[in-house]
Length: 305
Ligand SMILES: [Zn+2]
Image 1 (cartoon, rainbow, N blue to C red):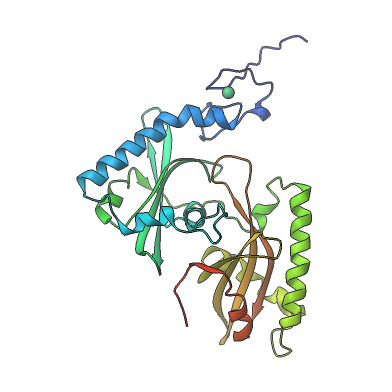
Image 2: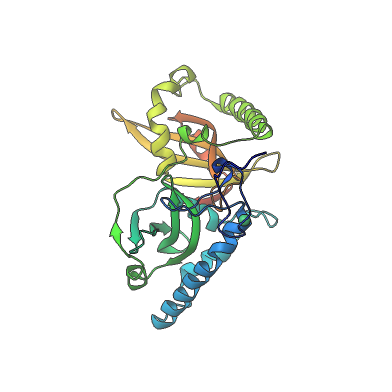
């Protein structure tokens, strides 16, 4: 085959990459492309280390080595063997729904972002998570550093650059089709949907919102997913972790709950790009149904009696 003169190669290992489509990018607007995930990690490892050292230095200077909220890093998982921690769930929220975004740019027009998300948690009180990362296509593409703090002084040191008014791509229904979800996962989700739907129908009281009116409540789906009052995590009969997002709403004076059951899909793309896939969503005015779906461990939200 004749070489046509178009040359692409990995910025880390310099392996020749056949086409642009085969290249992986994490930074917007730079030609830095990679052949694989591990090359991305090796390339940025010194930068990750730089930010680790910076955090250590700041914590020493501000005497913040033993902040209570740092224990969220070692928070217990729902089951001993489960790898899913509260940390990764909080991280997920910070990545998709940050409260503050800052953009830093150097003279070479290279940029990175700081995302800050504030939490008020029953276990750790008020604290903020901060994430330093690259964005690609308005999504976190590579995380350079992530930590938590309750100190405003510490947080202020990371508010670099310009504050941005932007919405990151959120894991709403429209985000689902953009991903490559394997056939096995689609079948598994379909199966779970029918199990949970059957359960929900069986428990449902005749006085509750009729199923044929569910579509009138579709507008409450995204607000519930983006800013839930509570998130619970439990294991279903197959041993899979299911997240339940619940939010109380008000529609013309009638209060109701919107409940979304989700499965966390681990994408094999860049780090921490898990996507929450909704399995079943429904409204209810029934307090009993609401209590029934507050199952497993409360991940975020206030403890209620
Ligand atoms: Zn490479």
